[in-house]
Length: 129
Image (tube, rainbow, N blue to C red; front, top):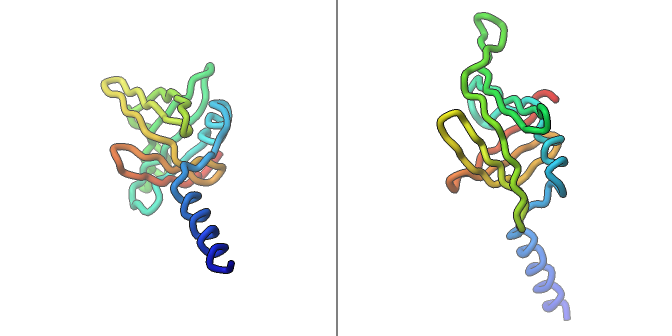
C-alpha cells in the first residue's frame, strides 16, 4: 500500500512540473502585471525594459542607464505588445518598426517575468512599478 501511495505522489508531482504555469486569467491581468520597469536576471547589461499601457495598447521602451550622466537614456527600440491568449496561456507579440517577434509567457507575477523565445528562456525581475 505504501508503495502505491509513493508512486501516486511521485507521478502527481511530475505532472505538475510538466504543466505550463498559469499566471494570469485575462489579458487585463497580463497588462497589470507587465506594467513597470524590468531588468534581465543574471546579466551585467544596463538595459531597462519599461512596459506600460497607453490608450488600451501595451507599449515597451528600452532604456540604457548611464553612470556618467547619472540618468537614463531612451533608445529607439519602441515596440507595441500584442497579448495573445491560447489554450496553454498567453503569448506576447512584440511589434517593432521593422520586425515582429512572438514569445510565450511562461511566468508573470508582481516580481518575475519569464518568457520563452526561439526555445530560449529569459527571466526578468521587476525593479519599479
